[in-house]
Length: 614
Ligand code: G6P
Image (cartoon, rainbow, N blue to C red):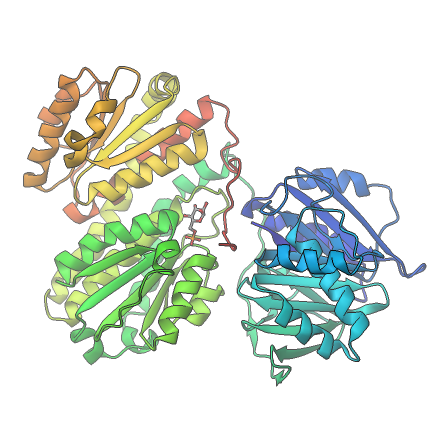
């Protein structure tokens, strides 16, 4: 999703900005742009390009476009198609105000009509261009910068983070945040503005995360921060501990494959961090022992793969803590009636910690004065900062758009956390808690070893075979159902093959009509004996219709294995960790299919890593 980078300082901005944009590439984008103020002519100069950042870099090569103040952007199209004219920066009528923006201006259509009536000229189809013209209008009409910005923020609706640069003010950037993330890196005689601190990690480790609904006037040595009422705010500075290490793919063909193989160590690291913070965990999370003991209901809110992790964790919390657990999609939860409940805890799961839907649900929950917890892989993210407490996964930065190691480390943290809660509620013993940690480490081993066991068979035989099909049905039951949903999502994301998932028990209520030779069924087994018997019947229903069947089974489940055309046999683990144990093999299998098809696996079309717009 859109990346915003800005620089003002003693140094030259172009390299800093292009470097920052490069680091934000993984978020997904389809065009990019750069603008600066030429120190000699004092004029604004810019270039924009469709496609990869390298296209912009080539355009700039050999051109003396650089300066001490500049802004850059990677755009993920929302309003207006992918084209150079729609890339950012966007400008006002006289091209003396440049704006880069992340978010959506919801009333852009109405504003554009108003501005057209005042003879503004528009050259793009974007909502961002409207911001540049609104700036032009209010800076003309207002007697001070603050007055102008306050009028602008009153005029714009939606969620946005934008940075504006003015030709007639070549020493100052304006950074405005409502909803979408924005932060400022404070260096020595230089300042960086970005949507993600990764853009400037290594150049400075002192950062100001703009509070929601605030704006900053930023020059090379000073930041003035105000809220949307014009009141000055004292900036709260944070020290970053992220490093920018461009260790690349480390010999792997794609980041996704590298990240699939990083899961075992990610699980180990996540568990070890959780265990080292075990003492006074409730205090650290903004809770008390009594509150946890008296908890009556849990809510989990997330999007995409994180939502699947939440759906799997529902089984952890209900089985171990005897807590009714509601798992909701953030995009739906936001617009549903909110029922305040006593003794409730809401957990917000997000790899990036910046997904706008999930964040908005957190804000809604906070506004109801209900306790909240974030589970995220990014300790500096808005979700971690805004929630009452944060559990951090230690997957390491995930670059591939399709989430892999974030998912398995989320399951790890949630499994551990459910045990910790069950222990606090005196539903399990300390010994059982210790066993749970061992079980996680065993599942991590199985996750990796299973890939190794089937590596050659998948890459040489199965992936080329399954890559021929145009659609797939995924089935699972009980805890394997949300896992099957995750598998279907992975396949569709990276291979563009139509994949639909159903609870296996629902097959006969409709989806069975889809079964034919052209539609393979991928079925995930379950370690619960009773559920296994049901899964077995579902597999028989599939075979009786002559459909092709691939199964993921556990050792000892020979009957199910023998029904299938192809099967993967996985060592037995703690039944609640069946999905985690199958994760590596499932991801590797779909990865290989996408690779056979030659898909751009790390950056699938239309997708973004961090979805910061609704
Ligand atoms: C996007 C990504 C998915 C991710 C989802 C939620 O759709 O492409 O991989 O699962 O956002 O992201 P989050 O960072 O909140 O977990």
